[in-house]
Image (cartoon, rainbow, N blue to C red; front, top):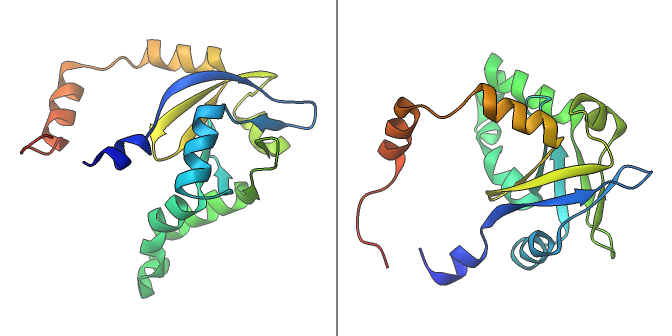
Amino acid sequence: MGKEAVNNLLIGSYTARLDRSGRLKIPEKFRDIIEQAYGKDVFITSLTDEAVQLYPLAVWEQMTSIANEGALTLRPDVRRFLLRVNLKGSHHQIDAKGRVLISQTLRDKARLNTEVEVIGLNNHLEIWNKEVLESIIEKRPLSEEDFENIARLVPRGKTE
């Protein structure tokens, strides 16, 4: 992985605030990476109702490009996925102040209040109610089996 790819990773976490209108001020380090690597267009949705996901639009398009493969949209699982994420999701642009609107529906489902935790997951962000996140991590800790499964996913080979 080249240095530029590493610099484009959305990693770490920051506490952020939602204003009265439900706009999230994206933490500056995340905003800089998103705007420089992907532009200002984002897709905001919720995959599970536990949190809200913010995808740079280019990442979202790549992730959902399987649906462009003809008959795949007829598969019940792909169709359910697309219905769910598009019902709840919407295309936005990061405004001049670094904010994006999170719909009332998404805020309610994910129990987002004024202060939220914004987590970088390499190519997208998740926005969490901090108490909900801590509770989930506590209830579902990583097991030795989880670590073994993750280790199998890590490519073996040369590192720079």
